[in-house]
Image 1 (cartoon, one colour):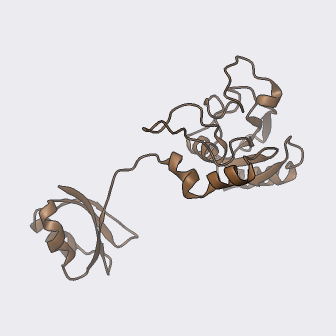
Image 2: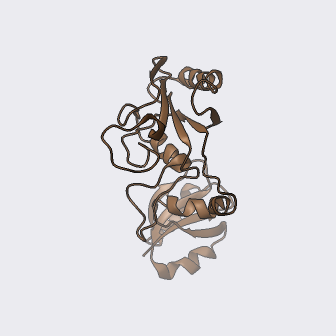
Length: 220
């Protein structure tokens, strides 16, 4: 069997679904806004379905898995590192999101050296502003002082500036962020409140971009 997206030149109808099911194909997903149906079908039916009227393409659904270790070379970031020696030094990246959990080993410090109490110049998260409560919680932030109300913001922070410490890809490649030597500012503004909190977080970031050390040069 194969996991296949069946794409159409129209929005799939009940008749399209019925035709698939009548041919023994399992419907696993029916998209609302994209012209496709998710299916599981015998491999020997792929060519037949591909030639049906109204079908424009079949896609292998594939497995969703983390590929952050491939993001850096895919974007050419490794060339910037090698050719220009730029790793994000001297700037802060504000993450306006669900928060940043700096207890994660890839986001707690700059040098990945084990230490119970980190020196201020080694702290990865240099400020944590809670836009929901309108409170500056810490600046800079020791390990565990900066929190995430979910998981998304921490993931974004890792992509932006993770040091690579912690879990690795299957081949041993570390999950290093685009700017591993940049500092982070946690602007927690989602998602226990509403859009007002996000606007407040953005405005705080703009107003305080030069109050944070190092200065905020990027906001995401």
